[in-house]
Image 1 (cartoon, each protein chain N blue to C red):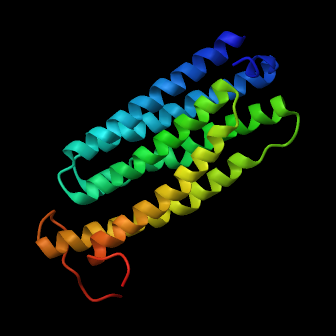
Image 2: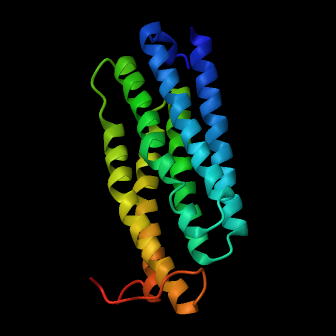
Length: 117
Length: 92
């Protein structure tokens, strides 16, 4: 906090807004994870946190650290790219796994496997 | 003006901690294994963002490395768990 207090007001306001935006979106995603009924609906909820939730917080961190350290600070971009590249892969795999399990058990009301187009 | 940033940091920390608690709750009640894996992935992201916000507040760069390790480890963990659910084994 002592280091962040040196931020000028025109930079402090966007940093605060980005922090609030990112954390609120992540909270909404987690709320949807608990609230939604079906697994295939819940699969979409955490992507709020991994898209703009992570991006806004990482952007706020990038801006404030770049000002405090007085140089361009790009460590956050590595984390951001890592999250944004890997999340679709994991969720696609998880969705396929859930579909496979639901078909094998015959529950969840999913359509049976047809011929691949 | 510093108060605005203090409020934003506090709100961000509380919201992310609550998000982690909600994801943990889904892990506890999740009816099937895929719900738990999905909630674990959401938990990873919430904790990673919480680490970054805490690092901003404390002014220490050490929490970056922890966040990066969580990002990579969370990806590997979730992919291997999803693959286990799909195939029944991780390495064929």
